[in-house]
Image (tube, rainbow, N blue to C red; front, side):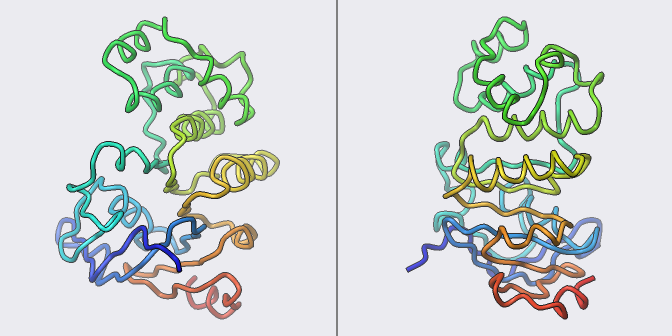
Length: 240
């Protein structure tokens, strides 16, 4: 029997009198690989922000591990990692320092201080940077000096270093060339998060075979929520 991880009951979210999500009912099971599809502005980013507790619904109820986000303990919150579309890197830090920031939830204030002074250990950070095909020549470079694709991979490495059980990702393959997209996709879905829960918002329809469930969202509403094996051409034609 599948165990429910996320459960959304009649969720709506409004911002500045605009309804961004409207009456969402959704369940995501433990260990599922979920692709989230929809046009830009359809509500994908808002849904991810609700699932990780970054924002609260205007109406309705969200349960994670059968608890509200406020009821989760620190260990449970640490099980959820997010790759943001806008990356949210710290521009005053180096690439390796940014990756190391993924460890801050597990470390103490002394670690954070050492990281800022550039005297922290970057062994683990370098491991994940290498997995993301980042060359050692950019490890100590300031984030501002990196290309868009390099910044994208720094953000991914920062998320993967957390070694969480749940990954929420908002367009993680943006700014990457085709070869790197394939490498990073395989790293996430077939390596680090192989037997874990992932929900990834994406536009790459050629990646859908890597997922168990496909959710289509349009104008803030769930348009379809089906198994990958049930997805038909007409679903995508009507969604887009």
